[in-house]
Structures are given as structure tokens and as C-alpha cells.
Length: 256
Image (cartoon, rainbow, N blue to C red; front, side, top):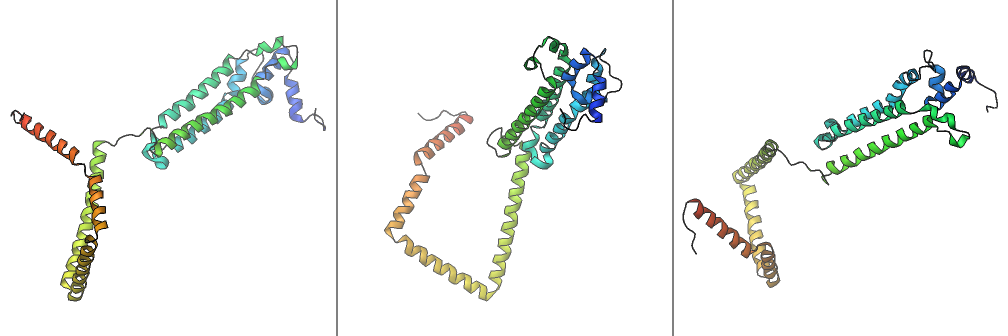
């Protein structure tokens, strides 16, 4: 009960609940639909569903817009855009399922309730379940976006055109770097002072490397590193396989 008494909205709602049928529909559609719908009648319960349909769809449409935004290539790139169709189907599917529950609910089932605990508060329950499943879908799509965007899963290999474009960009960068180096080298060679500085540097560098390579520990470390990086057995095996494939390609019998 309200301490200050019934409000005008409460009075309008009470004036609409005039029969057992309207009371049963109240548990399905809630106070706003029962009070505000001017053309709905308890004799035609479907009219209440038609009136409530825009309010049912608004949260789903908002969620669909959010999912379309976060799965657009503008914000998440091609890794996120691959989930756009999945997110759209999930959002639309959830809206269809909720409308089905609204339409299939038997509001007359509450007529058999003899206690308050036996009443089925469909209106409150369906809104709670709606928010829970919306949050679940958004969390699932967010998790998929995280996995695909960080290449932890669902990695899509680049197409041949993309690989060619990437290789061209790399080659262009290398070409620009080589051009800059050649310009710098020509500038140094044309300037006597810079050329002398460069020559002295390489002389000192050669002497330092020569002294370092005379150290036994350095020589052993280089040898160990080369032995770990270069597996001569595998290289010999690959070379033999390549030689056999070339011989077979030319129709010659490989040596026994």
C-alpha cells in the first residue's frame, strides 16, 4: 500500500481491472499495458500483446545496434567483422524467442492458484530473463571478439591478394631504406672529412673484431651458437630430397 494513497495512475489501473480476465492479463502484461492501452479488451487478449510489442522489441533493437557497432570493421577491423552475422542472428533469434513466450503464455493458468506463491508472475520473470540473456549474448560476442582480435583463436589466413599486397609494402619499405642508405653513403664518399671518419671507424672495428676472435672463449661461443642453429643432418637430408626430386622430374633414375 502507498502511504500517501493511490496515485492517478493507480486509479486509472484499478478502473481497468474490472473482471477476472483483466486480473489474469495483469500478471502477463504488467500495469503499463493494462492501464495505457485504450483499444485493448479482455475479450481479445491478443490486443494487449500487439500494444506491448514495441516495448518488447526496443531493448532487442538497442542491443542489435550495439552489436552491429562493435562488430563493424570501423571499430574492430576484419577480425571483429567476421562475427557480425553471428551477432545479428543471435540478437534477432532472442527477440523471436521472447515474442514466442509472450504469445504462448497461458494467462488463465493463474486462475487455479489459491495462494500468492502459486501465482506465475510472468511479467516480472520475462523481463529478468530478457536482461540475463542479453547480457549472456553480449558477453559471448565480446569473448569471441577478444579471441579473434588477439589471434588466440579463429585465425583467418590471409588471402593471396592480401599476402601479395603485404609483400609489396615490405619490399617498398626495404627499397626506400636502401635508397636512403645509398644517398648517405654517396654523401660520405664525396666528403673527404666524412670519408676519413668512416675509414677510421672501420679500421678500429676490424681491429676490435680481430682481437675478440682471438679470445678462445669467444671462438668457442660462436662455434656452439652455430652448431645449435645449423643442423647439418637436416640440411643434408633436405638437399638429398631436393636432388632426388629434380632427378625424378627429368625422368632420370636416382642413384642407388
